[in-house]
Image (cartoon, rainbow, N blue to C red; front, side, top):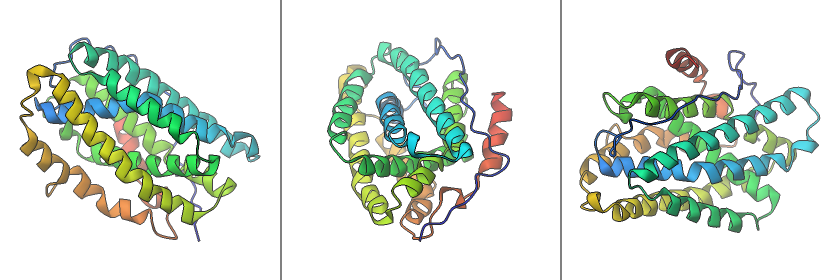
Length: 273
């Protein structure tokens, strides 16, 4: 049976709006590695349509919630996700100008979302819960390993991804708690993770290759070895999140079983958000 945990008292879900312009962004902005850069471009491209899908799946059930605190958290979740999408649209315009065809990836993601909207509201919310957990794991990894962005990353780039990571951490249980309240089917929740995880990973791999192919100056795909180590090597991101990803399939799973609120608040102070 699913358990319910309170959001830590030191966590406040607040929609913030950093004013970032990315005017001095280099073409290969992740460690000078085109493959890692293309991967981050792919992630940024899926965020605007992806965040809109998350918002819609949660908003569908918003009127069924009667608890004032839960209503407040849902409104804050929607606000944060909306601002994430808006800021990544600004970022995407800049990297598009650098030769990264993120418009193609965003177009693909928008098409996929139209297909997903044919699913039941329960399935759509279950997929949001799954992807919110995956995003929260990526966020935690990045907050613990900021050097993944490089030894001296562009400051606005660092602010963008760590601000996003902080807020994904703050609201990481909102969609889950809503799902347990209005749907409560753990078999559906875990089944949808098994569906959406390989689909999402396949989309990222295909999108990364597409961006490298379209950016002709980088079409030699140099940096694959380093990228492989950063992703699935001993200290790679997928190696790091494997255990907590598996926790999702436990009957007593809850996003706040891993309380990283202190880390998120430390980054709030570091970035002066």
